Image (cartoon, rainbow, N blue to C red; front, top):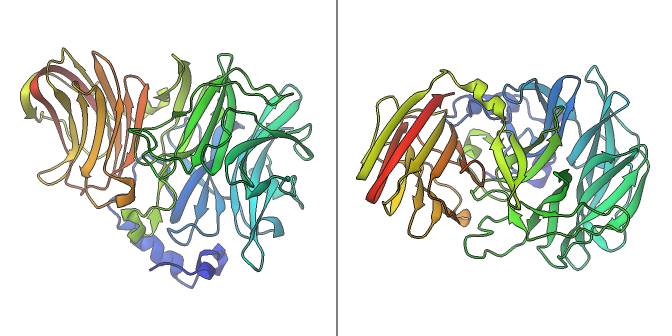
Length: 491
């Protein structure tokens, strides 16, 4: 049953007696709780926020509505990790308890200054007519983990020329100056990104809109993120309102990036190439990056999408975050690879290994099965028309990952992957790949898969909801032969 507006905009202390205990009981019986992904203790998780390294920990917050699976009153929930793999729940990071965030502490980012972690975020408010008024706000976490909020917003109004959709500040430092990009909608209902600067994180000066080639590219750009890698400027954002075009833009909302020369901070000119999608799967949105202490650029995304229902909604929780991914540039693309630390989850050092030549057949192998695992499969000498993997499979369920050599496409098919998913997002995703050797690296969990194709040239992120007894893995070749070499590590 859908919540009323009043129910959705309750704070946690306004929960009915026993309401949270009932939610926790429903969640504990859910077969799709993840084993190694960040997920909410109750209710709904969405955008990753405040991703930063501070005082020996990777800190990661996320948008959290604790009382249900609809988008309601948002908190920041705080997790942390020493190794990007084993995450501990810290608790609520930012509460929506001030006049400037009365209807939710929305997305934002973090940066260390003066030995404290500064959290810059959007405060969501609504007036009596339910008109939104956003504010950009600052909270500060000290070395003890205590968070205090400023009494007033640091950016208290929306500039002329933009609508109430003005949010998600992402901050970085260049020299002695701090900059932030904010996702915006122009008054003509087109999306863009706006740039500010500050010398102290408290007083911000509007510089103006980042000048890209796009005057009309969707109706809103959410969660912008600017970084520089190998001397190139990279602008990541999540545009809403793009029409599907062939294999592209198949999700209801997209996430992608522009690569160009470094952003000119004086003129705000950004000379860039084409918009490229970050992920070709079904469930990926609102990513955020940080620079690790070793210089790596690391990204985490929300494994979900707004405005869709998911099977776990009935169990009182929704969504999770992706595994952390290291970003590099290669051939004019952002390459995503799982951080090396993920290997710490492998339960056996060597893994279960097979080699086989498949000739117009489908085959299972001893020891190849499971619910949560990493699987690397390399397919070579391909004369078959189609080669691939069926996983989380049984007699009635399977998720299918294949390479069609004739079409030169990688295809992910979750038509039979388990509990029914939202029709409007479809059941098949594909992308073009020209390669003689196909390498699939899968990170499978109780209700998700993240697939890295040919060392991160393409990535497919998807939720799947199979039964617990759908654990089989099958390799197949159709219309000819192919050599398979695969290793599986249980997680």
